[in-house]
Image (cartoon, rainbow, N blue to C red; front, top):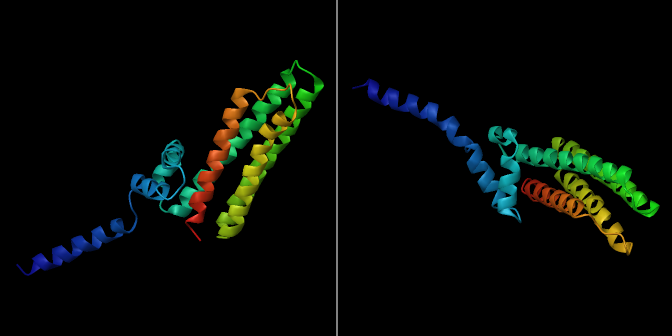
Length: 177
């Protein structure tokens, strides 16, 4: 019977490290519960398999930023293809070209946010994410300022998704500092 307490304490020692970090799905749910759009946050993070291995909020922040970087990159490429294939007036090609640059700028700002996050400079990470959001919203504004030029629904959807990804990344990073 003297060995029973020994095994009990040995079992506790094995159990304690697993109590320190919640399972990834719990971490995602807890983290996303503090964002402005829980359902979108959960769906976005779960779309990336790396989130299943996340150990803390900082790693989820990096994943959210990488998802947003990828969206900015694909949206810039999509805008470039629309500019190339534009059959409307030259102004339309020009607006699409500006959109390409703005989405590239958004991606660059998000990469800067990743760097700030790595250095645990969370305020600057948030500033860079805010800049990315502003760059992303420029394309729609350019179309609205030019009467007679319709903002393609596919671009509007991509812009909205990038805006929401940036908002989610911002909300998660805000939990760190």
